[in-house]
Image (cartoon, one colour):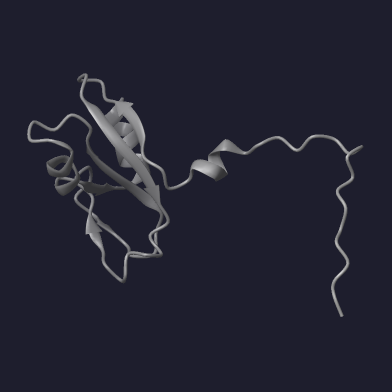
Amino acid sequence: MARRSRKRDYGAGHIPLNVGAVTHGWARDETTGDGRSWKVRPTTGSSSAGKSYRCPGCQQLIAASSAHLVVWPADHLFGDQAGLDDRRHWHTACWRARRG
């Protein structure tokens, strides 16, 4: 038996778009206090296949399952691919402290 379609109540109020939820995982541009441009992408850490990374800010390990940031230079001298190859994993708090 076919399911009955649910009709939307067009008289109901508008549901605002949660931009943070939609763009989670997309890289954003940030500029640090020294004027350098960076691409910053949040990650949940769940897809890192058990890897752990060393944060360049505090030199501590980032657990495989913890949320953190992946950061790479936006204006690398040797192009975009070289910038991606230079990406580093940062604790969110360490990156905020460095960013100034």
